[in-house]
Amino acid sequence: MKIKLNRINDDFLFECTNSAGNKILLDNTSQPNAKGVSPMESVLMAVAGCSGIDVVSILKKQRQHITSFSAEVEGERVQVDDAKPFKKIQVKFFLEGEIDPKKARKAAELSFEKYCSVSKTFEPNVTVEYSVYVNNEKVD
Image 1 (cartoon, rainbow, N blue to C red):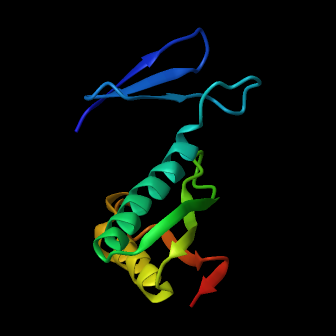
Image 2 (cartoon, rainbow, N blue to C red):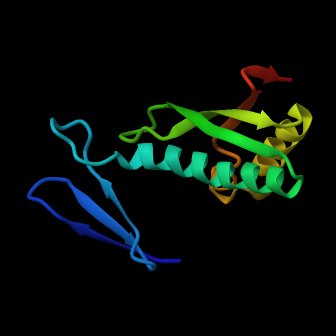
């Protein structure tokens, strides 16, 4: 796996391109008029995307009918010398459709405990917590 990063303005805007030619923009979001996401925001997006792919894939294999899927991810950071890495990440999945809530909860559990390479990358330094909502009801 390899990406290429190119600076595309006179400040902090970078274009990142993967080997397939797909692109995202990274920027210093503490500056006015930022045109991309911050690198730390992109990490949270990666957690959402990686685990989202897992959950949808698992539920599709179980013939669950998903009509809507979204996620919210929040990261809590801590000061370590001059850096501010994440110490905790919280993920909330929101699913709608003909879905067995227990299967949705199990899919999320499998993602974070077994399959999601992004969240596994943080172990053991970052706590990743998750919750699942099916048809507006929290699944315990």
